[in-house]
Amino acid sequence: QVQLVESGGGLVQAGGSLRLSCAASGSASSRYAMGWFGQAPGKEREFVAAINWSGSQTRYSDSVKGRFTISRDNVKNTVYLHMNTLKPEDTAVYYCAGKAGFTTYITADMYDNWGQGTQVTVSS
Image (cartoon, rainbow, N blue to C red; front, top):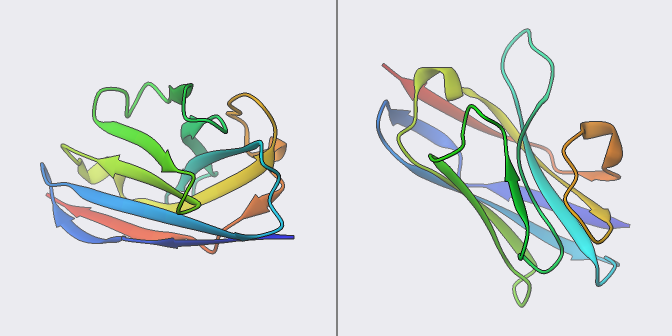
C-alpha cells in the first residue's frame, strides 16, 4: 500500500504563488504515475495536473495551463505542484493521487491511492 501526504497549502492573495508537495511512501511500483485534483466547496473533485512515472509527460486542465507546473523528484519520492498567478477561483482542497502505470491519467476513478488533501485559499 502506498501512502501519500500533501503539504504546502495555505492562504495567499490573488496573483501570488504556492508550491504543493506530495510525498509518497510504502510499496510503490517503480512505474508510478501521479496527479493533482482540486475540490471546491459544493463541487466535484476536478482534474488539475498529471505526470507520468519518469516526468517526461505532463497534462493540465485548461483552467491552469500556463499557470501551474507539475514536477517530480523520484529520488525523494515527491511530486510538486507549482501554482503561479493564483486566482480566487483556484480556492479548493487539493489532493494528490497515484497509480501504477506508464502514462498520465486525468480522471479520478483511474487512481488507486489518495492523500488527505491540503487547503488552498486565494483571497481577492
